[in-house]
Length: 470
Image 1 (cartoon, rainbow, N blue to C red):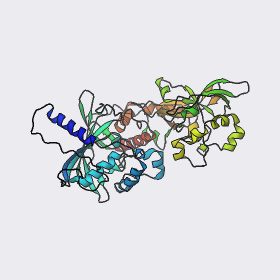
Image 2: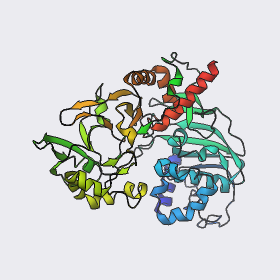
Image 3: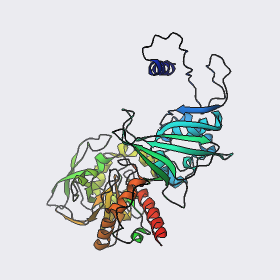
Image 4: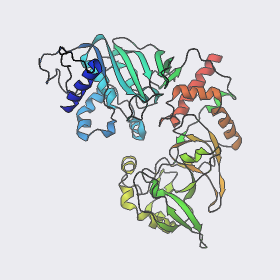
């Protein structure tokens, strides 16, 4: 196969360059599916390879479970279960926790089938394997199920400050482990910067009560910059959420208001180019009742974010699904007529098919409930290099009057009861001691950096800090 020939050529060039040495043996490179193929290497010349190795080095494919072909998913599903990678309940999996990496299955399968006891394995993996909350929990058990053979993590190298693979935008890490030993925390963790400097750190589960939790990374020599500006218990019992999700149809639900008519309706134009899938641009009239100021990710470029657009939200917030079609026809006929023009497009949304019942209104949204419309909330970007929490309150909109602001799904929201409570939380979250904890538990700039799960990690970290201080 071409992949084998290319690998052989690259290996020879790396080892010998343009050397004229004629005694170089052809590298032993073979095409083989280490996950599903039976033992042995069928295309080896000697047809009698060793079954186990003391050292294995690899760069497995980075493919999410939901990107695999249906046939390969079905063929490998028993293995995902056998190695404990499907460890989430149905709800957690449906809401994004099922982003399992094929690389993890390949690593565990390879260690199980081809590594001798006491042997070492080194592989290139997405950094998120160690630093995200749910998706890789089963892998962070570091055991080969069902016989429970332990795997000892020897070191992890973090290349988030570099781009070792120009075409790969996700942060990269390498893992070295040993078969047969228990992982002992903290583990050696090295951060490699752009200038080739290496920072020696140590990593451990961010939640002391959960060995499977995402890792927290700290430099042994680094001390905290100061005390919390408030009692860490201010976070206790709080739950964060993602903002309103158009579920693949931003071009339909995101709008600009052109004018308010003398009839009290709104003349609007949809932001047709705002989503990945383009839709026709329309100008029409709708009722104002279901329209809200929209705070987008880009609006955080300002020190004080200001909504730059509007969002049409035809959602029954209490039921967390679209308003019944008959009720929409009767109460908001103009809005229903507008949405009906996109019916086939909205029904084809992957998120609609996955997350809603078959009888749900075709314009149903995701992550829209009563909390979405909280009049006072603390908001921050989900993807950023520093958590920048801001206080967002209701505004007097020139077209809509008094309305709560709705952040989009690339923002995280934390509803609060009062403005004063919100100010305390903003000061707490933006303080340097808290920022240090956030950075130690997250991949800067990654999709999960400021996710709702970050609040849980921060709560555990703060509780642990309080316990140690007693």
